[in-house]
Amino acid sequence: MSFKEWTTAPTLRKVICKHADAAKYVVNDCLTPGKEYDVKNETDEFIFIVDNTGKVGGFYKTYFE
Image 1 (cartoon, one colour):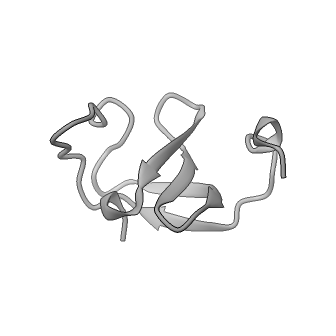
Image 2: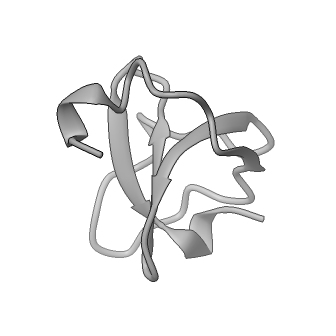
């Protein structure tokens, strides 16, 4: 699946953000703890979701339940 089609792709599943505390990156603008997000794609290390900006972003799996 092309990354250009992720915004219109069907949702694979839903995940809940458990924290937005990052040591290296600023994620608290894009993630809200306790909010449920639609997963558009997933790899071994990352989950690609529609974040608070309305765009698809890739985040470490450690931020989600």
